[in-house]
Image 1 (cartoon, helix red, strand yellow):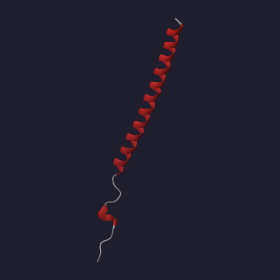
Image 2 (tube, rainbow, N blue to C red; image 1 turned 30 degrees about the vertical axis):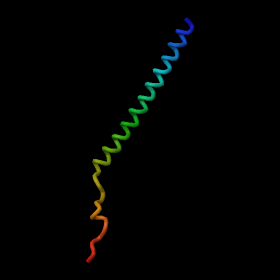
Image 3 (cartoon, helix red, strand yellow; image 1 turned 45 degrees about the horizontal axis):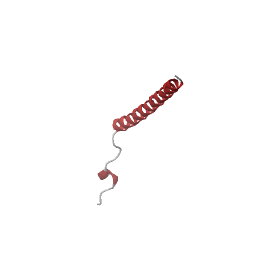
Length: 56
């Protein structure tokens, strides 16, 4: 009976750790997607041909 209880305690701890890791991964993905969305909304600042002046 003691082994079974230890098994259940260990199982519960592993489930909590997995849930915490999923939450962290979801937060990272959300932050990454938000950054990409903000950059796309702003557009490009300069183009390669606009970077240099043309010779006279």
